[in-house]
Image 1 (tube, one colour):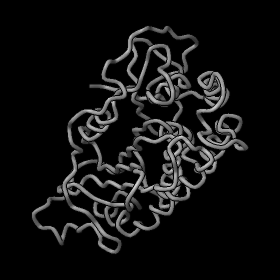
Image 2 (cartoon, rainbow, N blue to C red):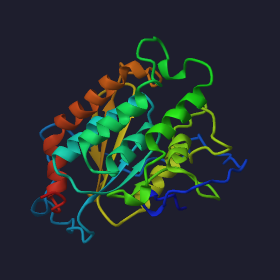
Image 3 (tube, rainbow, N blue to C red):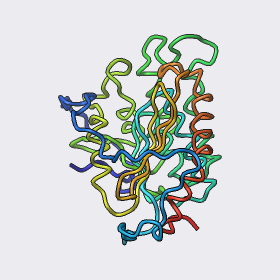
Image 4 (cartoon, helix red, strand yellow):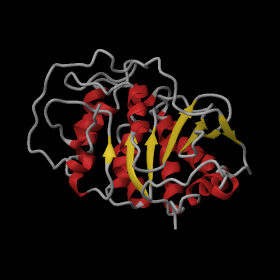
Length: 288
């Protein structure tokens, strides 16, 4: 299955819509995550080649493919995580991204500038997230879809994906081209929160992750969020996939007042695992 790669899309002057909706959209598949049981604890580095004689050095190209998982308010944790990777000078070759992670990915991939990413995300947030209201901030009010679409157009309509510094892959399948802001709108869909856009919903996250893991050009990092427990770092048995799960027990996924807290938690988790992440990257010269 192929997905839209944004750097291969030019800005479209118009788009056609259809009423087709993937019947499996929004539903999780029964397949298990393709990761082994190896769990790393703070202070435990990923084994280097000389420590793991039976694991040959990868022949894949330099750089890292990044997957940003599900999450609305919690998805702002990816903002903090990407800033950490940026400051550590990690070379990203592509970003697969879902829901708010899609906004983070596009905002970063345009210039590879972390400050510009922050500015772009703030531009979208202002006027949509309801700073002075309480409760489920993003979901309150009439015509929430219209408000979100208006802000997406304001923030991203002038963006030309073909000029991005690195590819961004979103969970969007459409028979005809969609504007960048429309692809972002589709990426935000969640059945209990935001309706489909012109009949389009994102493919299920499990399928999207499987597509990411099926790629083999570069080593891979997966960053996801969860609502309880502790943050965890794990890797596959081959040593080519590193997965960071960020625990956000105090950030409801529709309470956008907590987006700053989520971003801080994402950065905090990355800093906690910095030694392990950099060891994984340096194993095959994935960073300078």
